[in-house]
Length: 507
Image (cartoon, rainbow, N blue to C red; front, side):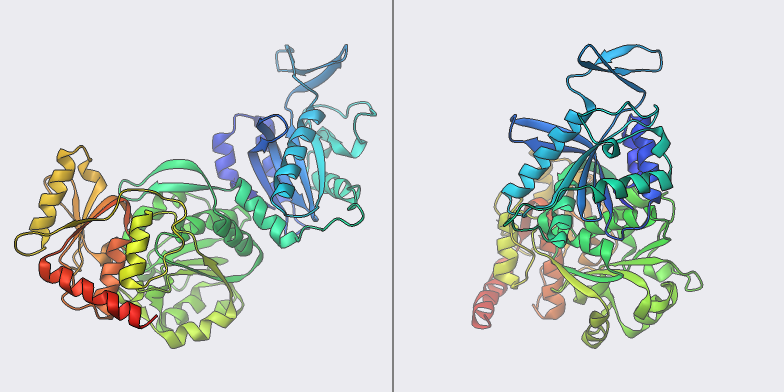
């Protein structure tokens, strides 16, 4: 069964040994290919204007099962419920474990039905893995309170089957939820996407809820052997890849994450390095003698050649046509910056896979998205999330080179911006990154692809906006998360203005 987050994260973050034990068993359960368990979720409880909590929400045989886990002992005395710890100390509970599970279940039902998902079967279950079964009670069905005699893979599978079999049927005339929509909505409600500071190799935020598009893609990746994920810069392709790779590895599959640019190692290392069953290897360093159960290709537009597909055929178990792989690619201009892109190869490979799209920009500000759409006619998603300052244009007295960009970067530092949060991107360079005395970095589109920075200063605009020049500018302007500064001479501005009627005439 898929766990969200994966078992390694649950083991690291939860303080409940009982929840860890249940998670280990859930991971080993098979039998329902669509099964997924979400751990430690908070639900917006409309009835009480607060958050209800559930230890697990499990989708099993088309039934949503909300689970409350209680480690140690549980007792009812004189009408009140108590938990009993290892020292045999009693702690009064605000309500019975079953009532807690039902409250969470009702909150989830209300949230999804208010969003128009339709009716779905839902059940509340309590798991007390340390004690014998409680005496039967009119307060719950015997099948819905699991004790230590169910704490094995086989026992928990049988128990989940019993709960699903006893689930209620839809009321007459109610519209039923489509399982595909329900599954994707659960991924969206409970998946937390990481926000990674690629410059420093650190996770700076763990609790961003997945967008609807990201949730839809994650659900599709879990169910289909071959998937192509299309999305413009900033739509979160690499973040989805990270979560999907962890889910594949958690199911015991060997996973390869590969890409054209060696710089992307800095992006993937914070979350995937050291993970069991996952190798992170630049494509140029692959050893075709080794094959993997699942292969993820990031920035696949850089690797869309016949030679690359031959290599993929070798490193994917069962080959490219029948094996399990995922390609993440940008259909815009990035293919002309580095690597190779053969349209005929894409047309050959695409029919082998399910195609899904990411269409919401989660990196760039609205101003940056609009600038890209206006000047480059590139689709980088709907600018629905990130708000920020407008694009800053700087016109130097002479040329818009690195020296002029350095002056802009120094002013940002003087205004309180940390040097390490600033990139200068020379749009016509192909050089590797180098650090300047102020702590900021000068880099090129080739090495900036797939990465991001808080503040970006662009200089050395292309002399010609042919495919290569347009691609370089596209990569450069879509790296910024907070502010974008463009250093452009009067001649640079004139060439940029010429793009506008060209774009209008072709639309």
